[in-house]
Image 1: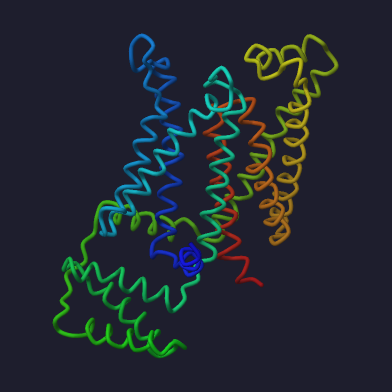
Image 2: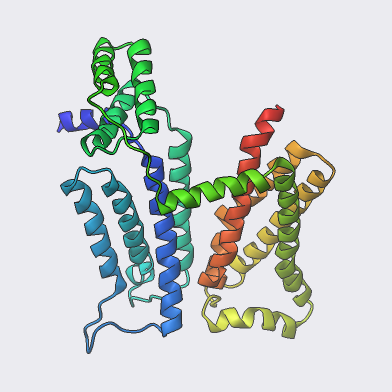
Length: 364
């Protein structure tokens, strides 16, 4: 038992782990979204007859089982990408039925289910960003990655770019590592990789590679500093105006009983507002929308007047509050109809992060 714990402490991050986590995250989001769209279009069909009902959580379990078995049985690197995709789809199908698991009457449409699923996605996204941020490669990890790349040699699929990358990594370990065994091992591997016995092939490009290259070309052509700056201004300005709409309608309706009834009636009918819950959470949503709308409005004004650092910082703060806090309440009241809007929020945040990472640091 103690030896197992020591092995965990000596764990090494797998090469490409960040990519696998991203695949899992995308698959999870697609799984939940496509499942909800399909069920709404088809009228929530029942798979089975009589008392038999095969819930899609079982398909999620099947996908998770496949995702677990694949890396246990196969050593090829392609397995990890496939396992990540199956894991994401399996978790999506599993989490989509969370309402049944937390209610005594197995209520699939339980209102808090939507924010719970969204919260899980946000936590998974934070873990991915943390893994991407802390991608420090030690000498031991570099050697693990070198052995991982040896699969290309065994499959006779090593191209010149991969060979150059492998040689550079091994030279760095041989010349700079503090561990003599690592240096010796790297030197022996280097002799092998540089030998004539190791042949290379022309690099093969797949469909996903061509998509990636097209995206890089698009980014270089259109994602200039000025274009992103203008896009952030427009996005925060439009979003701030949108966020003011519901609070304005809500507070305007307070003066009239009929008007406030029109606002909250749909929520009462769908049991999103009950006598027990009252208007507390709806009021919290309204206040947060107004507050975040104000933050984004101020940030866009600052950016218009070239107050770049402060404006981007406020825009980042506003989007973080929106995505991690306000969207939970929006998902509760608007349910899965807010998926599209949440996607737009995430895209705007990614634009702001991209700008901060690539341009603001260069200024300072």
